[in-house]
Length: 133
Image (tube, rainbow, N blue to C red):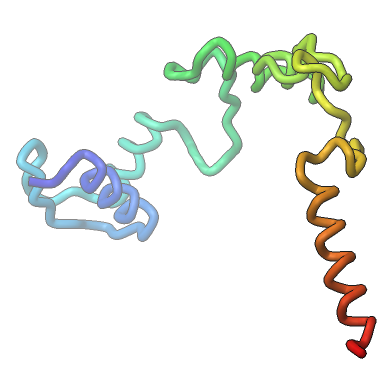
């Protein structure tokens, strides 16, 4: 027994190939079927096909309201707004409740333990540069 998809594909192939008569094992439609009859059946069921069809966001049955809003957004800003992007009230700053700027560069004093590492490396370099007597 063929699946619906297999049945439709076979019917499409027959209609496209223009085969005059095709033996079918379709239990719902046994016997010989003409390619023209299948072509007419497909046209009646699916329309002429081959062209562009308009699908509106409202016709997408499993689309969420947010998805429909993104699909129908007039511009990128509206689409971002639909998904809640760029709507934060976070401000740039240096406190626990603010965000650091993207170009923020901390000072040595602001990085815990960094000064000790620099001092240690400086001492090692000086030791290499100073020959023992």
